[in-house]
Structures are given as C-alpha cells and as structure tokens.
Image (cartoon, rainbow, N blue to C red):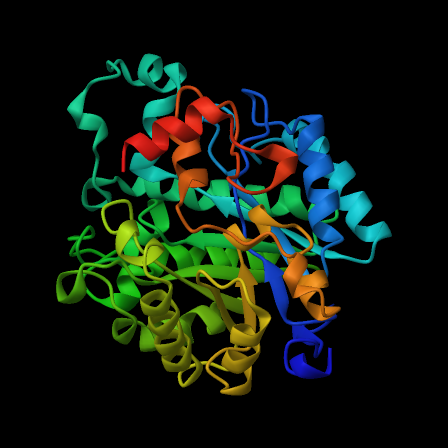
Length: 384
C-alpha cells in the first residue's frame, strides 16, 4: 500500500462527505432489473460484492429519471417512490459497511425513447417513425422543463432512501450532453448559442437539486469533455466557463467522460489515447475550478492511477470494465496480489450485451460470476 500513497488518501466532497480513498467504481449498467426498472436479487448480490472490493466510493449505474426512457427493458429507473423503495436495501447495506454509494441519474434522450410501447401510444407514433430521431434543437420549453423536473425529483428520491451522493449524467451523447455539444445543439435561445447557454439545462438541474438537498448529498457531474468529432463537436477547451458555472450552481465534483455512439470505438479500443485525452481534459478543468476532478478511462492497474494522481492531473480515479472483470481488483492490488487479478480483455463485449437479443444481462469474458454464454461469445468473435 506504500506504493499507492496518493490513491489511498481520503478525499472530501462538498462540506462533509468523505471517501476513505480516491478510487471509485464507475457507473455500469448491469441490466439486472425488471421491466419496471426495479432491481432483481442478483443486483443486490453484485453490488454487495463490488462494495467489498477496496474502492473508496462508487455509483449505481444508469438510473433513468424518465419512466418512458430506458436503454434496455432491464435498465434501472428512479422515477417514483416505488422505484426508490426497491433500491433502499442496497443503501442500507452500504451504510452498514460505511461505504459511500451513490446513484447515477440518467436520461437517454434519443437513445432511450424508442424502447417503450407507452411512448408510441401516447404520441400516436409507430416504432419505426423517423421523427423519433429528435434533436435537442427543436425541444419545446415545456419539454425542457419536464426534463429538469425529472432529474430534480429523482435526486429527491435518492435523498429519501439514504443515498449520500448522486451523479448527473451529462455525457456520452445522451440528453444532457446533446445540449452541451455544438454538433447537436443549434439553438439560438437561452438554451444554446454559446457553451454556457448550452449548459443551462445542466446548470438549472444542479441548482434545483442543491436547493432541495442542501448539504445532505454530494452532487457529482459526469461531464462530456470530448465527443470524438474534433473541432465540429465538443472539446474540453470549450468548457472553461462551463466548469466554473457548474461549481457556482452547486456541484461538488466532476468526472470526465468521452465518446458518443458514433465514436466510442475511438476511445474504447485505444487505452493509451483515452488515458492521455482524459488527463489533458482533467488538467484543463482543474485550472478553471476548485472542484475535485476525476475520470475513468480504460485503467486496470493501480500504478497507472497512482502516477496520474501524483502528477496532479486528476484528484480521483475510477474503474469501469476493470471492475466488471474482477470486483476485488483494487483490494488485490493494494495487498500485493496483482497476479491474481482477472484482467479485462478490453473487447467491449459487455457493452454489446446491452442490445444483444440473446443476452438477458451484461456478461463478462473473464469473470466466472457471470461468464458470457459460449454461443454469444462465439457470435461476437465472428463479428470482428
């Protein structure tokens, strides 16, 4: 553990939320919920295992704030008191273990609306209706207000069930990052036209949540810093005023993220490029805010994470697919048992599982707890 002196330092978020170290498990959607978005028993077993893996904090992944928006029909939702109550056991367990467990709040935007029959019935549209490929440029004021309220309500539900932190998902091409990017937001009203106006919906969400939760919850923002389209899209250099406004609105920390559906391969397939890109982005943001800045970027070795913190490019480091591969990865490396770690193969098949008709959940190539069935594995390998 002496080799990781920066990683094992405690870190404070907000006024009184303290994590015992600077390593977190990133929000991953394991697709272990019923069609109403309520967790199944396997959900609790999985997160209880991860919480024992040596991380200082972490997030439940991809909780939709809109009852009509899911990425799959097995995705988590936080849209009602009933949904919230179904999640309360995991927060009770986290409190018993003195673990800082948060929940990510998500709206899938164009990537989620096409999932539910109720949406089509309500809007008198067919499933193949191209008008569903809507653009944030054309959203009405009323619809924008609805989305702001949905995030606000979800945060209040999280507070009610004892969540000490939330993460607002404003990345990866979903609703909020579609507002942030000049490639997708062509508005010329108060919701677009310059970087701060494009961030207005995010800033309003943060402000309303902070007003309701006060200092009882730490507010993280998963912020898009590079959508992969170079100068035609969103790049971190556009966010200097935005990150200052995020701090002023009441956020407590920022986690950087990159890529959208069309560009994920650019980031997922090249660890060195992605880590360098995230280090640059985090370093840039740190010049413009006092908030702690972190990221998760294809990292599965603590010596890499330690070097990043030592350089002061970031304040905390997350792990996503590395955790899917081995829940105990951090604990093993901290205790000198790195040879025992089941390493991620970085093939991203776990992401393909989400839309694979043959897969009833997210699997893994190496983790025996939920090893991918051979017929699905062979199918993916044949598609390379």
